[in-house]
Amino acid sequence: MNKAKMYGAKKQAPFRSRKWGIFTAISVIIILAVIVLIVSTGNGRNTDWKTLASVNDEPITVREFKMMMEKYRAAIYTYFNQKYGVNHSEHFWYESFQGEKPEELLRQKTLEELIFIKVQQILFKEEGLVRDIGYKSFLKDFKEENIRRKKSIDEKKIFFGPEQYSENQYYDYLFSNQVIKLKEKLSREKLETDDGELKQYYSANKDQKYRKIDSFKLEKITVKADPEGNTAQSVMEDILKKLNDGEALSRVAAKYSKEETPEVSLEEVILNEAVFSQNTRELVTLKSAAEKLEEGQTGNVFTDDGFLTLIHCVERKDGGYYLFDDVKGMIGKEILDEKYNKYIEHLVGMAKVKIVEDVFHAVHVR
Image (tube, one colour):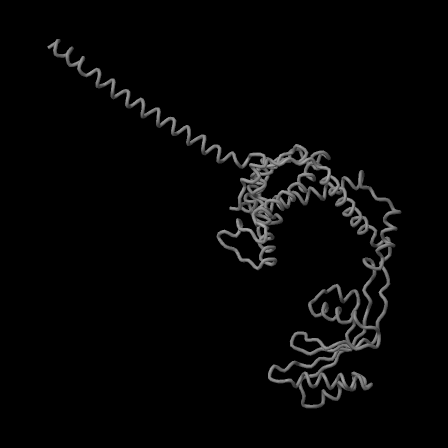
């Protein structure tokens, strides 16, 4: 029995050894495959965090670049649609239209916009408005803000803005608010404006920007348009002829109101700054027509809300100008905006921009 066991043991050993060897080989292959898969997947994820370009050594990542590309897709498509009459197709972004390629133009526009933004973000950091201008930090804030908003909704608290921001929306929201803060800070330091500059700007732009609206006293005659024929047009032409012959508009309107004609009416209209503040469609139309007339003049016939309309300017009074002190704050803001834009343009022109070409050209429209 013992010999048999020993014999059996000796005969089975090579079989177990071969089996173990095959198992080990398969295990190694599986482990290697898993490692390759993990590395491959990791590399795919990490592509978003590759540096595509840098502005004064501040990185622009692929993730941030893709976000900005989405923002300008529609504008680039509209440009090609209007210039070349092309419509969207499966291959639109990769085709060439007289040497211009949509995807290349989109990448270039995106890069220019991000250089412009990054220069300002660097200023945010230098001026102590933010600590971190990296995109990972932004995404962390973005996530926390949406969590806060959801919590406010759940707790029925009041808050302003959307229930949830999109990545693009929150990026624009943060950036615009930081620009406002930066302007305020710079206005007290590098971009300060004194009273002399304010008054000089007021004098130079007085007629274009700080003139009050003239006030008008108008006579407005309307003839109800008639979709079935040209009766209303004939009546209006007759009214114009009588006016040109020297008849008063009130007498002409009175005559037609007694006859069986299309509905004709005459009313006196006063237009002034208080009335214009209502900004209704009808007032905007009347203002546009009245501003073309001097006192005593009659305008051209126009159609408004189903009526043929004619206005006669009875009286026009000069509105004058807003006083300097009344618009001083507005002038300060306008000057600051001009100074800020020039300052940023200068910094963009001086910026040290490095592009990682292979990463830049590897980003495609999704």
